[in-house]
Image (cartoon, rainbow, N blue to C red):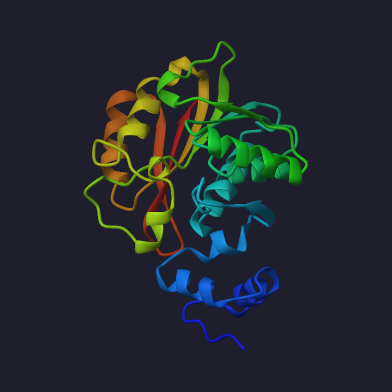
Length: 244
């Protein structure tokens, strides 16, 4: 019987299967240690993704970023194009995209070599071929340009209070300068270094960043279509830029 507060029956079953002694596990959980790290994997878009302290834990909201981007790719008939993911972490976004649209040519970059290692393992276990590169977007350029960029970058301001559980996740996957806008602004301002003239950018954003990002994009890319979409809690969560 599950008597651990905040843990689902399924998570409890998985923990019992993995650990002979649950007492130290319960102690960790009581200290806000994420159950996903203790189990060692999560389901993301129906695919098994290994996670540990080297990578951000994939969130339910990010599945909808993938779904919305897949729908956009299909609507624009971009199934045979090149995709760049910025900040791949566990690789969950790229893996889901590649499994759902196998004809995509995907490159995924991350500043963390540890994250790239985890992502490569996940890609192998999900039987997909993705070009992972250990590099920061701030140093990245490509002679072969991309049609689609997708990113759930760090977007939490350093002064912001966050869920205690996130203290175990890598800081470089969470925090960004400039009120959390650093990565978005850089990708918008420097898109010509890696994007084709016609492109789609798909971002997950903080729920208070949408209006500022929309205004910034309209100033920087006045001829592009830019819009915000909401998550299931009716909060601004996704931001799209289309240059046609």
